[in-house]
Length: 106
Image (cartoon, rainbow, N blue to C red; front, side, top):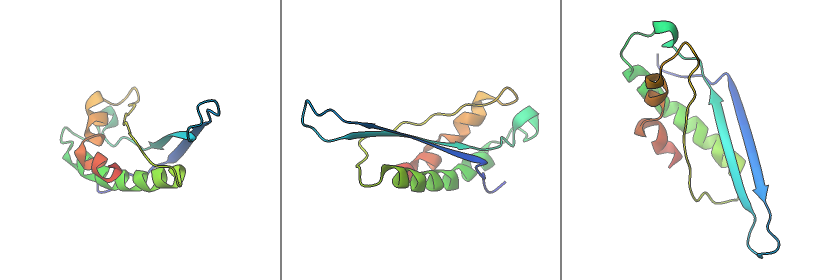
């Protein structure tokens, strides 16, 4: 497995305007990529390194989407998370959220 092809992308943008404090608008955004879990139901074996390696490209693609969503607004912080379906394991999500994935987002 060399790539994780997102089946769906979700973008959520929350623009907060606080005219009373005179400060700039605050943009909060969430970008979600839905990918198939090749390890679901035990089909992928126990070696998660290919999943970790594939997460690098997913991180690069997600960083592009984040830049698109944020537009001219600066990024002050970020978080990351994952949800695994009933046929997956928490370790599958953890494999996708390593430094390999996160470096392009930084």
